[in-house]
Image (cartoon, rainbow, N blue to C red; front, side, top):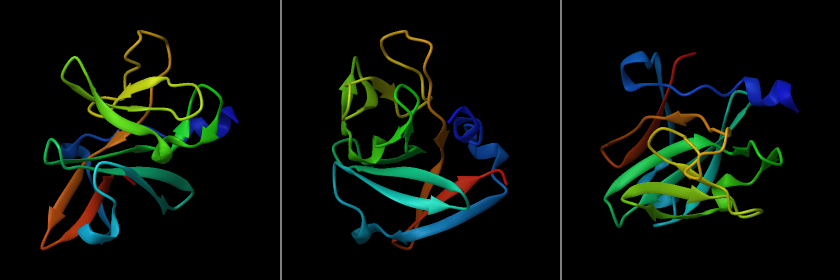
Length: 125
């Protein structure tokens, strides 16, 4: 399973080589997550309407190595937008992927842009 985790690395918007179209804005639930596939990666996408922002991260929870983060609850912790893993409630920042409890677990995050009602996620490959 560690090999699967290695394929996920955060991408900064400046490093995007491919804006991958994932669907219409209306295809994604508000204040919740959905999962898309990009090559061999599962990516969780969140339409966080409370903050009027979109987020994307790996769907793989690094704690128990399950593809479940798109099913997690989103919210904020100390003003930081986060997702809580539905299995064991580990909280990860949707901005930088850090574990909000200070544990040595981190998730990859990806930039999202909306253009003409279409959702795109940025990848470096």
